[in-house]
Image (cartoon, rainbow, N blue to C red; front, side, top):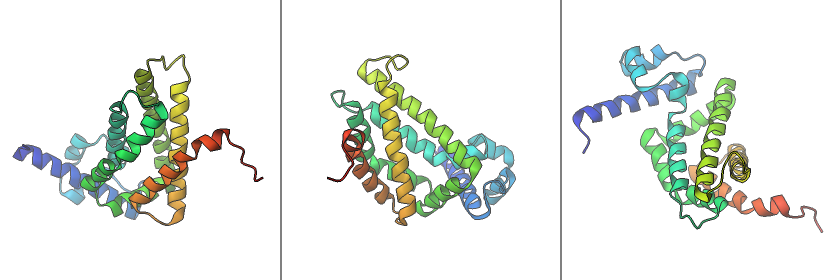
Length: 208
């Protein structure tokens, strides 16, 4: 059971997170200072740094949690599943948990606004790409461990993750341009695009 002290710490962290995302999405990431985030929650700058390393850390806090949950889900998939199937099922079957993680941290509407802010802010977009590359490397090592291969000599784990990551990026882009910003929509898009990977890589695209 959560103690009173733990509850207070959790609520302070959640308040700082929400305040930061609100400020980032309304006045801009670069324009927002740590002092402004702390002031919005009526805590000191020192308190902010007890919970977050800096602005980038708080900007990606929700994504970091969902990424960690996804890596854990891949690691827990049945060993008989093929690598791409393990990635696919970890995402699709774990979707409810991912959505609950987002909803427990911040309102979904705020999360979606922050996604748009990341996409339109060069510093955040660069950080997002860097973090995605790090997550993909972690996933490649998880797959290599599952399959009993050496990730540094066998290219297949990184190739599989690269394909999966590419599908995720295409899904995100199409979701973003579709105008349908429900979280469930990106799950549906991703499932459709994952089902097309085989034909996209080996099929004949030309109309007969």
